[in-house]
Length: 238
Ligand code: GDP
Image 1: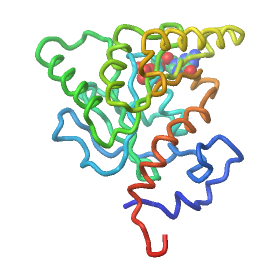
Image 2 (image 1 turned 135 degrees about the horizontal axis):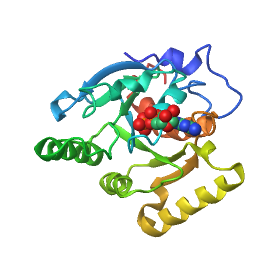
Image 3 (image 1 turned 180 degrees about the vertical axis):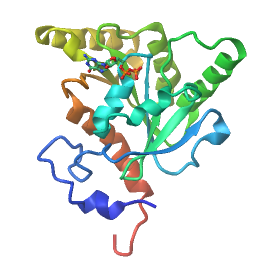
């Protein structure tokens, strides 16, 4: 079921600016609801609704970013509950799209076979999942582009889909240094991922200071909106 009426004309539409196409929700991630959790391929939601995934190193600020976008305080923390740390958690947006919260990586808590199995699942998800329209990679602005971040870029970019890098916790560095931190990341990307230049974008973000939220929403909705439109049932005369 897709709430297309709401998407096209809901009462909460109409923030003056900030949306990619002006036709979507004012706060596209608000009202997201937990849908399901998947630790293996056959547990993924059936293909249909487009999904946007969020990834990031543990402690990068990913849960805070999702919660800030969703205007909720604890939405994304489901991914941190014991037993859920190697699962992709799915949330349904009001538009019908899905948000896939990938577990934070970087802690060597799990070893051996479990870790390998998980990595294989994640690599397969990022490189071949059909409904996946884009990936948001959350990085601590003070430690961008770690080896594991690059692993995500390497798995995802060959699929040809867009990726948005959020330089999170931007409030942790002085306001005057933020633009140069962003410029450095962009420069690094243009050198190391030159052939994927048109898939990659980066921005400043702070959940604490509510910085970059509208910008991130607009970027993500440019991926989701066309996919939702394609999926939307056509009525006579359209
Ligand atoms: P995750 O492990 O990537 O999901 O990271 P969390 O969202 O749980 O954040 C990790 C820590 O960084 C927590 O203590 C947060 O309160 C803090 N944090 C997250 N976002 C921000 C931010 O924008 N600014 C600041 N100053 N701290 C943040």
